[in-house]
Image (tube, helix red, strand yellow):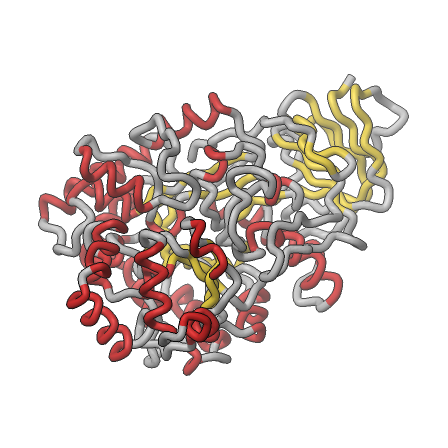
Length: 535
């Protein structure tokens, strides 16, 4: 007697191997058997998968679900696509470690403002975070990284001062503690303070802590590339080479309009680094636009000390004038040209300014009778630095080139959201609701870039192998029963930039740790996910 028996489906096992016909049986939280099982055994629940694909539950390599699953455990935007594990803690900022110093703890919490400033955390470190979320219950699994910004903030504060040798030693101890508690690696956000205040030498020194634990990753949101080429990527590869650790490059893109069309050259550099001995992979999401807080578009010195310190500076007329002059003189991030009609407001917390959601800064400036830069700074002050935007600074051609490269896998750079709950506000990037389904619907079926088995591999087994998740990402007897039944002929994303809170369709059944989490296309309310521990 099995708990669940999936019959008549075509198995794509997550390894990249060709599909084959088989039944899949589940007992408790494990895959119990694979083969011709229908009619030869009994099960408490039988799922008819005839005409459908049975795949491993997808592992989203790059997410920011750290607090969204705390705020709303359902995570339907991911679950309805067949995503059963989110890799959290990316881009350097994690809700741990929390410093015992109350001021540093306050700045960390105000920096992670995506859901609610008053959210109860209830933890100080990775293990505490794991205990709280496991006790609460979450719909999908979480594989946590630990962030350089959080470590730096806890060890030396959120200012822009360089780290002393004692400060680097303190950061290394905090990283070691997090790795001992099962963090899967270290992430940096080198355009996002305070991670951006760390120079190459600092990151190399900290990253060497990873080398004592083979397989733990250095995951880099790199510094902004310049007109001279992918300089941020080159720094990340240098860090991996000098620290002797595997490098994973986050959300690959060519963002500088002066370099659009060069994705092939970028990947050729990665291939060359790999031939020279650097263990390197990357992730990409299937959209020609990114999203982040507008704060990272400000000069680095303005952001020192955290979000509220930034807002206080912008409220001072003299400092604001200096900020404005710096922005106009130095460009966006690494000197990219400002295209205010390509920067769209997607989330505002202050009710009086929510009309700005969906407007570009060019449109908002026109509506207010001011220059776009002034509209942006006005909104930053009014929203206390929390405004989030979408950057239409990428091309479809570059994205496709990154996607098809053998070293890439899929990461949404999104969060697990649920439209009718506390995470359903604003007009967020559609990647939160559609990245995995968009791969299968658009880039496998409609406009083929990948084969179905290759796409599944890049969202399951390939990610599991990179993380060292030995019991997930593949369909094999004895492994964790994270499974998705997919209608490959209909699976598709529906979220758009204009209307993002729309769930994907075409994934009628999802199983998380042996429990049916989606049945006939509807979530069951089962919260059987876990915060996982690195081996």
